[in-house]
Structures are given as C-alpha cells and as structure tokens.
Length: 237
Image (cartoon, rainbow, N blue to C red; front, side, top):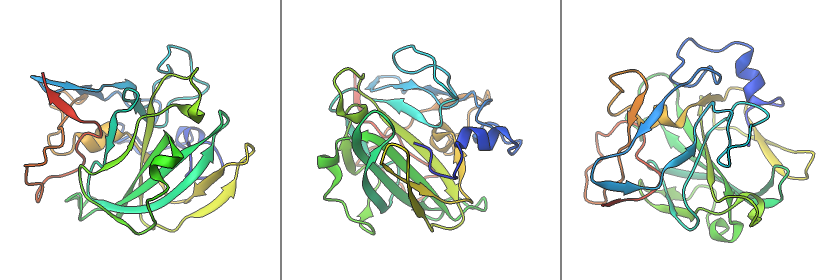
C-alpha cells in the first residue's frame, strides 16, 4: 500500500520530513483525530494514520500509512472532484484485490500551497466494483467509487478500505511488480499526507488535533470548499 518510492514510505519519512507534523510529513508524530458531526451517524475510521494498531487490535509492523474505515458494503465516496489515474488488481501479501487511484488538482481543492496534485489511493476493494472505471475518467465530489470490502477478499479479515493521500508535483507514475506479484506505482516526488489533514483544511482544528468531519451533501455548493469531504455517507441519526 506504499507507492511513493522503492522503500517503505514509513522509512522514507522517518529519515527526515517537514516540521509540518499535522500534515503528515512525519508519519510517526501525526496525532489528528476525527470528530463526527452531531446528529449524524457516520461509518467511523477504525485505524488512524500513524497508528501502530490495526482494526483488530493487533500491532502493525510499521506505522500506518493511511486510514482504514467503513463497514462491509458501505459506499466509498469521492472526497473531491478529480480524475481516475489508475485501476488495477493489487496484491500486498494477503491476496488479490482491487486498487484505485484518483488524482485531484490543487485548483479542484481550492488550494494554493505549492503542490499541483493530490492522489487518493484506495485499497482492499472488490476489483469487480471498479474495473469499469477508466484512466482519465472524470469523477465528481461525492460520487460513489466502490464499496467497502476485505483485504484480499478473505472473510477472516475484518472489512475496511485503506485510504492514503499523497502530494505530488508531477502525476508521472512508473510501475513495478512487488514480491507478491502485484503492481505498485512509483513517484519519487510523492509526499505522504494524513488524510485527516485534508479533511480538516476547510475548518482547521482549533486545538491542533481534532478534525471536524464534513459529510458530503448533494445539495451543497462546493465551489469555494477547501480540501476533502468525508469518504463515507453520514446519515441523520
């Protein structure tokens, strides 16, 4: 699930990252936590960025490079407008599964902090759900991308989608085959970001860590909205 370089993204960022901890450049220190909207029932994030604990409570081999969440069959929604960059059948060691990469321009996110694109990567998907998507296909904010499934499609794994966000200047990707026979992308300029940072840009946390989750509302005007909306539906309680 780590596509930036030929080494683990965790190791890459341990070697020396930006002082902007909340943005996620230092994967070992990001402490952002989600605050769900009152009066709504949202599928929660079950394992946060930089966590050493998986959804089942077991300890990870390295700090978490994204966030996990969702219940089996939950819709996964596009966090912003963008375009499909890649759709493929991945294998990270627990079996074949669908993987999806969506590219968002800084303009689409109303951001002007220097990066030109942001990549949303989704793992543990059912490949049959996403194989109709084509590279270059436009995606609208809130559009249903897939549904929550299981790592490798195996019933002995708890349901989840793994979501990573990367900041890049160039969308150029190269592809390699990993030791499990699955395809992985590479971009040496990519910088890993805590997805909660992107969810909190529109309303930055007052205490530096509590990110107010903004659900997608099909009736809302997002012309001037900065950053991402939530990737799971939230329903009124």
